[in-house]
Image 1 (tube, helix red, strand yellow):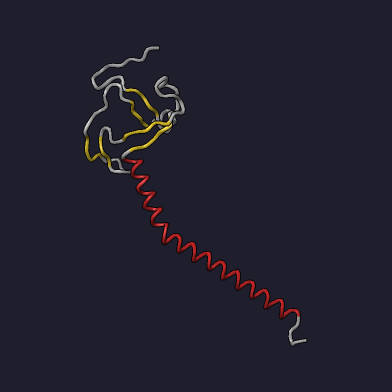
Image 2 (image 1 turned 90 degrees about the vertical axis):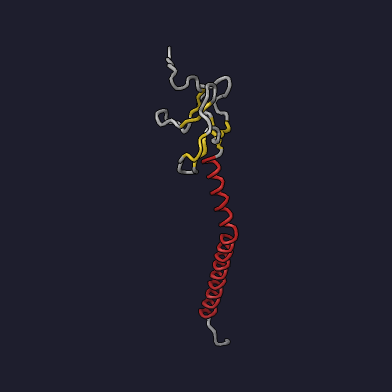
Length: 136
């Protein structure tokens, strides 16, 4: 009637809808890029600081077994002071400063490959030069 047939109208509607979809996708991409530029760097720095803190200064561990009863129960979460004996470079483990050695009665956290556990905690009963026997 006006020089258009039904096929022309449907094509123009689809092309306009496709343009709107492309504009929405571009808008979301711009918003994501803006967010990452603005906050991504801050999140990255916060993550590095947190991981460095846990690697060199302090950490927490869950107690995997009941071997420390009644002082520490199985499943308890304990705070670990990694600055108690020395200072190490985060992630590498190189020792920068050493100021104390473990003493009798201290609780020590170590990573056990033989027990297939992430960490184990024990009391220190003997020091170097002492003989300790396990009876039983």
